[in-house]
Image (cartoon, rainbow, N blue to C red):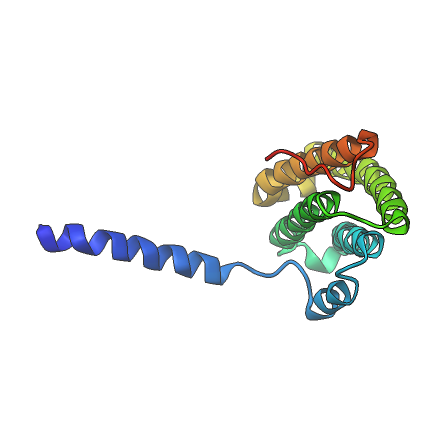
Length: 183
């Protein structure tokens, strides 16, 4: 019994490590390289993240229109929504990172432009995911697939709300270059 108690924490640690290793990176290598190239340019970085999130939602639309994908569509939508959510989390991290950093006047102007684009994109994302949810309730095929992605769909909608809230907070904050958001 003593041996089992000592072994339990090690087993839990191994399971945690295995779960982390299984996680996919939401970005391709090419996307990661693009982000590295603009690491110090807030506007360009936010613009790229929005582009990558757009690509995930476009992939969902294309997947839903392809009858050949019917067998695996639910799981693929699940994976794309997970990636989309991870990208929006990265948007939030970038907003926080750049808002907490002293920026030049030009960078501050560019950052504010990026904030506006995040707000606009989140409004579009919200509409697309509401449409997906309503179609999942009315379309028989999508209704069958819904159990595969309903929870990540809710997570994605929550991520949109969070990104929108963070961006709006920074858009109204006159000291965006020196006041990070409270966790």
